[in-house]
Structures are given as structure tokens and as C-alpha cells.
Amino acid sequence: MQLTGAEIVVECLKEQGVDTVFGYPGGTILNVYDALYQHQKEIRHILTSHEQGAAHAADGYARATGRVGVCLATSGPGATNLVTGIATAYMDSVPVVAITCNVNLPLLGKDSFQEVDIAGVAMPITKHSYIVKDVSKLADTIRKAFAIAHEGRPGPVLVDITKDVTANCWEYERKEPAAPVPSGKYTGEDIEKALSLMKSSKRPFIYVGGGAVISGACQEVRELAELLDAPVCDTLMAKGVMDGHDCRYTGMIGMHGTKASNLGVSKCDLLVALGARFSDRVVGNASMFAAGAKVLHIDIDAAEINKNIRTDASIVGDLKEVLSRINKELPQMEHKEWNGHIKELKEKYPLNYDESGLSCPYIMEEIDRVTKGRALITTDVGQHQMWAAQYYQYSEPRTFLSSGGLGTMGYGLGACIGAKMGRPDKVCINIAGDGCFRMNMNELATASRYQIPIIEVVINNHVLGMVRQWQTLFYEKRYSQTVLNDGVDFCMVAKGLGCEAIRITHKEEVGDAIARAIEMKKPVLIECVIPEDDKVFPMVPAGAAISEVFDATDLEEK
Image 1 (cartoon, one colour):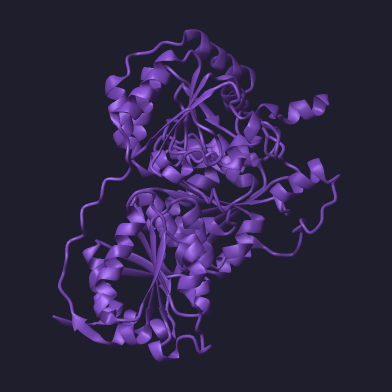
Image 2 (image 1 turned 90 degrees about the vertical axis):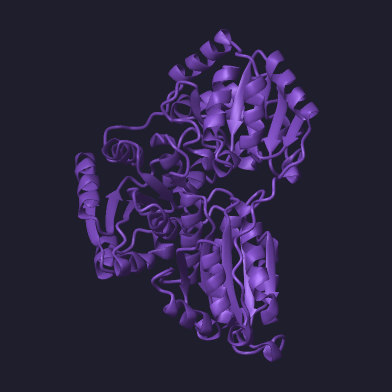
């Protein structure tokens, strides 16, 4: 049947099973919005307050559900406002399709009003970027975009469409999405080498990254930990793969990882890296990282193998599939002495904080208690992000969403909205710092407009906390441009944007405030006022070995 390009866009979204999109209209994309109007019962559009919020919402939807998230924007500044969100998704391997529209084909390259080569701009931060100049190629391009976004190592894809293409007509025929193509090339010999390393190890340690979440390999990772009889640490992106209450779990590794994880990995003789990329925030000084260990790396992306850390063996393939094979062939191992040592480290160096007053660690523990550990937590970036990773006990994957690779301040609120749209069954809570909240607080208006029952917890210490922590420790307390002690009243802002607001200043108020916010079933901001000099520990100085991890007690002793 003959359809306009705009109608083809909508039909292709329906083909892919898209039920929710996030965006902001403008001149060049009006035809697409007109077509969406005709299909509003099939595809729900969430009008965000800013295009960056739309990109983060699509990202949050994708992380929470495992499906492709979709965002829309018009040309020029509309499209460029998506860029930070697209880069955020790219760094964390999140499947997002961003659809933008550009000026008419004859106006391209002529500095026309609101013209930007967004396909060129986005090329380094997408798996692929397209510009569609011919309506006959539109449907297949969108189909390819979804396939590319989701297959192998996921990531964002941008499709830019000239406005005249959205108006032109072409014959459309519905097609079912193609089955995913198996990714990764490995051999039986690769599996045997991995098994040999595991069987000969006396002190194995499992290091889990975000690829375990993406591949749905949660059960396989837990089974491997039992069979190998090994302790397990994780990265920021892998929260929930291991149950936070599991006795084998040692906590996060890296710059703000636990001493048990950092010291344990530094002493292991085999490091089994699962869907992880050996980020600088994890390894610290690469030459000293797990220096006495052999490294087995399993990842779907061959480019990650030997990129940051040299391996002794590697398997390129889907983690769930590879671990299924390994688990069938690995005999039950036993490492009592090694696990006893790790247990001693956990008991000797537990996470701890000053319990005398209101603090973010206490708030996270209370959120954990009130929600029984079943909430979906999103975060912004900074101290609160680390505390949320350390003190909430995640027991299932896709319940901790955070900007890990890019470290995007302002990510969490939009992501929380997207996550709630994808997982309406979950209590969705965003943990933000006061600095981050200022970045995208306008998205509270989005939550209010649609009465999306999210909870925005603002950890207000009146400073840019993580930067101040570095200034305190490494810059002789020269607090250059990190003090935010001004007249902004976040509760009044929230109320002005149509949300409920609660301010707490004492720890006794936390549990009740969280419970009340959940019961309201509407968007609620909870402002938590904490001391300006609370610090995230443990910590590893930039460029140091992770074995040099220190905490507040170590500082006091020095």
C-alpha cells in the first residue's frame, strides 16, 4: 500500500514492537508527529522537557527492559540536544534508535535554517548513523537500525531523514523483524583452554561487567561461581547479576570498590572477566592490575580483548551461550583456603560510614529496607552514585541504571522516567546530587504532565561533592567553583513543576518519607540535606594500583 514516509516510519516502529517513544517536535519532523497522532493508541509518545531528557529516557527504557529504546527530535538544535544522551548510551552499550529529521534534500549543505549534519556529528558515538534521502530506502533503513542497535554488543543508531522524504509516498509492505544473528566466533579449543585455566587455579576470582546484564547471563554467572567455588566482584554496570546478599559476592571493584574486591583481585592467580572492558576506573594502574594472575576474558566484542589488559586466554561470543557450555563441562571445584581468606577480608574491611547523622549511605540502606530490595534505582553521577552502588543490595539485573562510561550528570531523572514507562510494576527511584539535579530538573515537569510515579531523591550537600572530595584530598582544599550554597529551594521548584515534595534533615525521617512517597503514587521529590564534607570511601587515587585502596581510617592513621 502507498504510504507517506512519515507513515512508513510509524509502521516500521510498530513492526519492531515499539510501544513507547520519547521526543520533542519541531518543524522538520512535523510530518512524523502528524503520523504519530493517527496512531497514538498504539504508540505512546512521552513529550519530554528537553531533547536530552528524551535520549536519557529512551536509554533508561532500554536498560530496564532489554528492548530498543526510541527517541525523536527535529533538526538542528533538536538533534544536537540528543548527542549527550546518544554518547551515554554508546559508552554503556545500550540499544537506542534516535530518529531525527532534517531540512529538505535541496537545502542540505546550504546552511539552511536549523540544518546540522547530525549523521556526521553522531558517527563517532553510534554503532551506525544514516541519512535517508530517498523514500524507497526508508523502511529498510529503519529495520537495519533496529537490528544493528540490538545485535551483538548493543548500542545506539541514528537515522536522520530529510523532511521531503517524510512527505513523499512509497509502497509499504509489512515485514516481521529478522531473527538475531548469532555473534562471536569461538572454537571448542577456546572452551578447553578456559576450562584448563579454571581447573588448575588455586585462587580464582570472577570479575563481572555489564555484558552479563546485556546477555541475560545472570543465572549462568551464579552457576559458574558455585562450580568454580570463587568469589565474585562486579562493576557499576553489573549490579544485580550477583545477588548482593550472596556470601560469594565481595562488592564493587575499582576506584570506589571494596577493599575485599580490590585486595582479593590483587592476590588471585586467575581472573575470570565476564562481559567487562577493564575500564581505567576498574584497573587503576594497568601494569599492576592482578599482576600475579592469569587472565581469562570472555566478551562478545573482539575489540575488547587485549585492549587494556593482556589476556592469557579469551573467548569471543555471547556470554550466556559461552557460560552454558563451560558450566556443563566444568567439574565442581573447591577452594576452601582461598575463600576463607576472602571471607576474612570482608570481615576485616566492611563498608562503613559515620552513623551519627543523616548521610547518603544511611538513606540507601533505608530505601533498601523499605522497598525490600526490589526497587529499580537510577542515579546521576558523583558521590551519590557510588553510595547507591555500595549500600543498596541489588538482587536482580536491570535494577540499577547509571551512566558508567560517560559519567553524564543529569542522566538519572530522564532515565528513571523511561525505566518506569518500561517497567510500571517497579518502584522507580532516582538518586541525584544537588549539582546533577540542576542539570535536568526540568524533567520533573514531564513526570508531572503524565503523572508518572517516580521518586526523585536529591542528596543535597550544597556542593559538587565528588569534585570537592578530590579538591580536599589532592588540591589542598582549594574549592574552586564547587560550592552551591545559594538560594535555590528544590522543594519549591518541584512543587512549581507540579510534583509533591518532602524535605528531610534528620535520619529518623528517612524511612517514613520513602514509604509516604511510594504510597502517593505520583511524582515526588525528597530533598535530603547532608553535610558538605561527607566522602565516598574506599578510594583508589587516580593512576594508583587498586591494592593501594584506602578509607577514612587509613587517612586518620596517616
